[in-house]
Amino acid sequence: MSTEVNPTIVLDMIESFRRSKAMFAGCELRIFDHIEQQPATVAQLAKTISADLTNLERLLDALVGLGLLTKSEGVYSNTAEASTYLVRDSPRTMTGYILYSNSVLWKLWDNLEGAVLEGSHRWKQTFGLDGPLFSSFFSTEESMRTFIAGMHGFGVISSPSVVAAFDLSKYKQLVDLGGATGHLPIAAAAKYPQMEAVVFDLPNVVKVAAEHCAGTRVKCVAGDFFTDELPAADLYALGRILHDWSEPKIALLLKKIVAALPEGGGLLIAEKLLNDDKTKPVSATMQSLNMMICTEGRERSLAEYEALCLAAGFKRVEGRRTGQPVDAILAVK
Image (cartoon, rainbow, N blue to C red; front, side, top):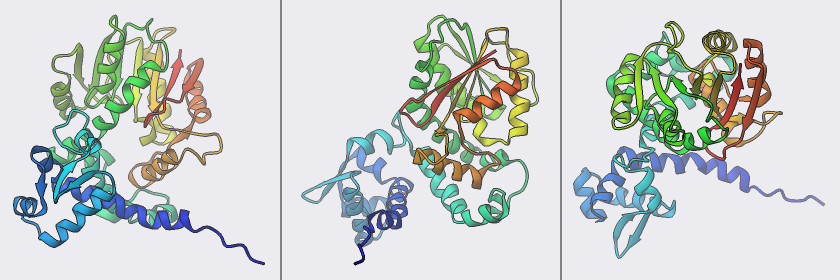
């Protein structure tokens, strides 16, 4: 007698992209922004965004079902989650990454099969773009700011836990290489009052970093960590950087960092950690596929990061799960 297999896992995955796209559309159409200013009926919102009333109602009702809006007597309001993460001027907004996902990642993922078959990222196939990967991310001021805003949203969630994962109180000078908006140095400076903190990133990125770091103790310095001399530090940081690159490029960067550090100096790495057999957590396996279509990199296990760091000249490597979007690794010279 045959036993029927529960189809729930397959049915859920069939629908998953629909839920994502509904949220993406809500952000793209600024629905959450408008409702944050004033809860509205479908007729009021349709007029505001020049939308078809019937179809807008379908989207709003779907967003209610997803837990992003509430509906009372025909008036739609944001949930706390939407107000916090889906409104563009919220200090904890995730809309930068959502807009980047909608306009870029959504299209790249449509060509996932090509990446698997051909062993390369999908920028050429999807957008017809050649050249350095991040020239695609930063091709315009708007796209650069959208991408960086997305990274900032993740960083605000993760960085306090990353800098608290290890006792960093002995370090006096932190330089975050490719630090974007400075969320990690800001978190480190807040937790460790003795620590001076610096964001080191490309000149156009540093302009944005300066806006976020205004009023903090964090300094902003322009440069390219692959080609320029690194600012002096006894603790460097790499947040969501190593997963962008192949092992040969990582080896060059890590050796450069080791050479710049004093004895006992450290490198704080913030990345998603795969388990040893690379099947979990799901967020890390999905991110590894994301890196496959976007970059030449991938997600790695702690053992793999340890091997890379030891080969570069570090003497001790530890890892910590943070429960946040990225985990923490500390390598000591």
